[in-house]
View 1 (cartoon, rainbow, N blue to C red):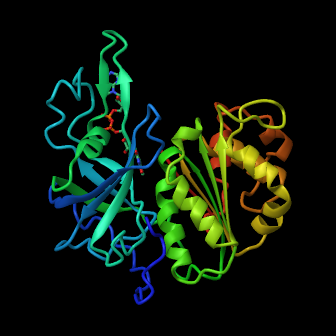
View 2: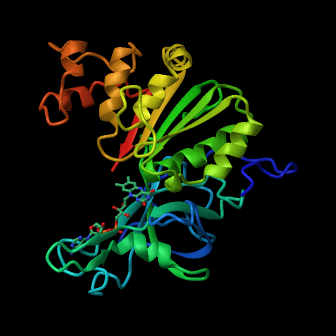
View 3: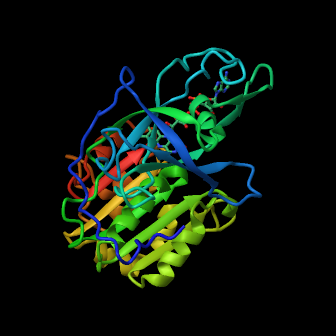
Length: 328
Ligand SMILES: Cc1cc2nc3c(=O)[nH]c(=O)nc-3n(C[C@H](O)[C@H](O)[C@H](O)COP(=O)(O)OP(=O)(O)OC[C@H]3O[C@@H](n4cnc5c(N)ncnc54)[C@H](O)[C@@H]3O)c2cc1C
């Protein structure tokens, strides 16, 4: 897909963040108008980019990148194929981060795109395959199918009102890449001239989503630096698995001065717990993005385990104006 707007088009600025325009009791019916696999076809995991037509609804032109929308996987909760044990997977919506810029993939704000990984598990007792209700509902949907959506939700993982006089370090794991795709499209189509980094972690190289788009983007924009961290194929300096924090470490010479600048923002999105290694690195390099909770030392934090009750205090010590986190 071309991430650069057509030459003749003038894009409006991002709208103010609207929330809950649609709720589970009052959802909007969107139509699937695009779908494509976004990881390597040889991968046993299946990730899809799905484009929804939202024309005629209140969400048209009014969502912000960094927000999520809810999807109601209609009909799936009572289907034993999708909810074998009928456990607590009730009729709740599931949230999905928006992957398109506020102008949509159509540049007119008439669509919203998602980046969804099919969830598949094994029933421990029977060995039967269990398909996640909403993710498979979305990935199965064909062009022309209709889908009930809610939202948008979220106001705390947005780009600033004036995004241009900043620098950005985006760190994603798995489908946490979704908002960064849209953020990069917004920034570079508004004439962004600062520094932007994208560090993207996945277990296998076949799982890298939107890889071609990001490579092309980094070729066209010398101020965009794209790095992947393939945990089960690459090694860190100590010989262990290579995670996103190791890639950050490798780029320290350029990232430390950048992160210490007050106008630089760091965004983390993806797997719950991904911040654990990253926060330790941020303390070590004295980034200023995290303060020291009372009574704690950097050494004590470095020695902390993820289960430590004190870790909760570290979690809360981030500078909320400069360090943003969306994990699930
Ligand atoms: C803010 C936010 C943003 C998010 N953004 C994204 C995104 O951009 N992309 C994305 O892909 N996800 C995203 N998610 C996660 C998403 O909301 C769902 O949690 C995810 O897709 C799984 O939902 P599901 O309905 O498919 O699975 P569920 O039906 O909820 O099942 C969850 C897991 O349990 C397994 N399971 C179900 N029944 C059984 C059983 N009987 N025995 C054993 N295992 C079983 C399923 O296989 C699945 O792996 C986001 C979450 C949040 C909170």
